[in-house]
Length: 279
Ligand SMILES: Nc1ncnc2c1ncn2[C@@H]1O[C@H](COP(=O)(O)OP(=O)(O)OP(=O)(O)O)[C@@H](O)[C@H]1O
Image 1 (cartoon, rainbow, N blue to C red):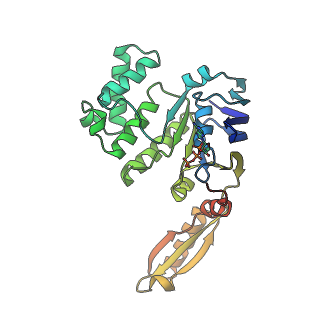
Image 2: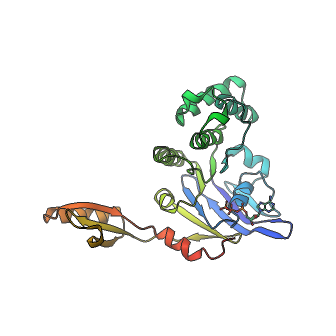
Image 3: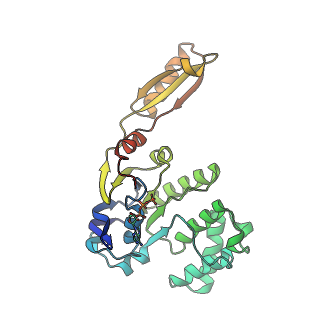
């Protein structure tokens, strides 16, 4: 399912948090949302999730204008901080969210077990949420966002607090969801990680959105065995295929390659160039 927002504006008192912002989230695509602190990302996500009313602007699901209530039935929302009833167990929280989305207790229970398995929290199923670590809470937050099998998924800093294995799993799960037709939007400050997983990037500064061109090529470090890091060569390749071909040629020519790794993120450079309006 596709979600399109056009001209969204939201003010708090006299402060304009989001100003005429537009985004298109395509079915099957993962979009990154980046921007400095206070740029309006969370405010935009809340409006797209149907949880905060815009002052003006239009939102559409598959080209049909959608009200907030409709958005809430198809959008899964993962806030940056888990925020829930801490004394409830992981299972109770997921069942409660299933029930709030109109499922029977029985169906919600089955779905809760499935989701706990998905995020590897089975052994914490009956623990109260306040006993979970930060990363475990993030994973429970991800599971909660999936309770009603959303067709659009919005995630605010989903990987913060997660260990490397959980991040990789999250990345794989999001790609699998996109492959099944879900439209995914991720807000994150971890740009190198984001650049590996997104298809499009929306940059937000001072409440305004704009699409970024996908980075063209990236820089790689090539170091031979025995060579110091300072003497390593750097080269730009258009894509991974070209880099792999070059590595093959080096090895065929007898070079003893000890390190061949991507070192830059053009997205990060674009972002840093824009990061002048931090508040
Ligand atoms: N409920 C609110 N009341 C008043 N001002 C708010 C409210 N929510 C957000 N703002 C203001 O709107 C602006 C955008 O905030 P928002 O949380 O959307 O930014 P963000 O891009 O998500 O920032 P961060 O990267 O720090 O999470 C900020 O200046 C913030 O102070």
